[in-house]
Structure formats: structure tokens, C-alpha cells
Image (tube, rainbow, N blue to C red):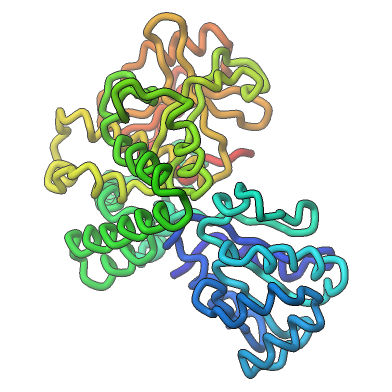
Length: 434
């Protein structure tokens, strides 16, 4: 399947000043698949070593990390010549071997002519452990996310529809109604299928939403296994409790994460480490509250106040047990959790496009779902699940902080009126940082 990260991988390959590359991301987002495809399309040979399953290779890094010796060993293990400029070396699941991670520094300094790429599902978790030393300044880094809605459209052979969406986003002219309805229907399918490549591939092949849910269940089991493997038993229980609480946290009218929801009497001291584990593993998204809508918005962060979303909307749908027929209904449902899902979907889309997540709330009850920094301007964003779009909070924010325009994401078609950009839910992938 076509992924946007491929363009970044090609740019890395062609950069004469490149360093070894680390591709980080949650488990099952497609790192191994895309790296192998990238290698096949752009190199004469690919050497792929999984350091989690290949214990011989894993143990060798413990004895020697000089580039020449490593390359000789990998040639022997793979029975493949490793030639500078012609061979891509993939060190997969590098979080399983701290010395392999350290070897990236020596490749940067002593053998920069080779194309070395490492992939890690829980690298952020592993690096936080004392025995890991991250090669700061000696590696390039990319973070890979689940497939966004545009990539979902590509997989569904709807590339022309995605281009039409981009064209109308640029002009803010309404899509033809038939295309608008088609895009909204596919958006609803995406809420269920999500962006995990295995779930998308299954849906493309079978057109069965139930099959996608089964795959999401398997991925959830892998997450749980990782919690047990990469954390102490006591911490693992807390991590699961925090993760399991996310649908309940989001279903509250006040979606601020509350430790007491996880466990009666819960505190940041008790569960803070668990939240950071989930964040480092890439399976949640953290949205921080800001106190003011001034530039730069990061300077006005309230670190004690945040919301947590799941990094894949399909996983939230499956985990919450939301009825698929409610999501797919052509009528605007009163179910409030559909609004929660729309908000989580937008959080995922914005993260994929490089936006740090912030929301705003004043001293009273006014609250904005997201606040973005775009080309040096502070832009408020309101998310609505359907066609009802009135927002007192957004009007209040614009008046207080003199925003040049605002963005309203909803089930309505494109438009621009009263300094409000109306963006359909299916077009969030078009909102860029610049």
C-alpha cells in the first residue's frame, strides 16, 4: 500500500549528508513492510535482520559494534553482499538490542557511505531505560503513524477522490454533492477500519468491517503483551488500567484526563509513569491544555491538564464497543460518543501532519477542541460530528485573541464565511503546518 513516508525515505536515501535512519512508531503501523518495499524499489539488495527473533545477530552486537565487523557478519548471516550505495540494511526491532542502537553512532562516524536504517516499535520505551544510550546527533529520525484518511482512500483505489478533496480544500468551494456524500461515507468506514495497515488490507480485500475489528483485537493483544514484556508486573497493570480508561475519559463532558477515573484515589504520582509509557510507545496521543492563545502557544501550556486520545481511531472504535450501524447511519445520530470519535480522528490526522496537540479552556466553561500554530498565526479549531456547527467558544476565542480566521470541522461541505473556514471531516488531512 502507498504510504506518504516513502517520499521522506527517498529524500533520506539521496541526501549526501544523511546519517543512519531510525524509523520509530507503534507496533503494526507498517514500518517493516514499507522499509522492505522501499529497499526493493530503490536498492539492488536488501538485508533485513529482526533483532527480536534473530538471537544470533542480537548476541553478536554485544561483542563487537565496529562497522566493518558488523557488515561482514551480516553478509554471512544473510548470504548477501553489502555494497555501499547499492544495499539497504534494515535492523528491525532495534529496541531489543541496546548495542545495535549504539552501533548507529559508529556507522555515522566511520562508515557513512552505507545505507543503514533501524526500526523500533517500542524504542521510546526502551530508551527510557538506564541501559540504553541513544545516539543523539548521530542519526536521522522519522516517526511513522497509522494510515491517515488520504492513505486509506489510496488503498481503496479512490486517488481521484483524494485529489478532488485537496483541490476544493485549496479553493474552499463546495464539493459536488455526490462526491461530498461519497467522501462522508468513506470517512465513516474509516472511523471503523482505522489506519492500521493490516486492518485496512483486510477491508480492501473482503469489504467486511467485522474482519477489520478482529484484526484490531489481535493488535490490542500485542499491545498488552508488550506492556507485560517491557514493564515491570506492577507497572504493566497500571499501564493497562490507563489505556482501558481512555474511552471512559473521552465520554465525559469534561474530557480532561482524570486519574480518579483509572482508580479511586488515583494520582499523577501513581499513574504518571504509565501514561508516559503509553505515549512513548506511540499508542496514545497527548493533547495539552493552553492557558492563552498567544504566540508561541507551547509557552502557555498547562502541564497538569491534558486529554488522551488513541493513536488510531479504529482501535478506539473497537475498544469502546461502539455499534457500527450507529456510525454508518445516514441520519445525524444523537449519540454523543460519535462526537468523541470525530475528535479523536481529528487529533490523529493533525498529529500525522506534524501538529503538536493543544486545546484551550478559559476560567469558566468555554473550551476549544484544538488550537494550531500555522505560519506564525494562532488558529482555533472546533470539531462537530455532524451538521450542527454553532460554537460560542470559538467566537469567544477569536474575539479575545484576534485570530485571522478559524477552522470548523464538521459534516458540512467546504465554505468560507465570517472568517470561518468550513472543512469537511474527510478533508482534515489537507490541514498542514505551513
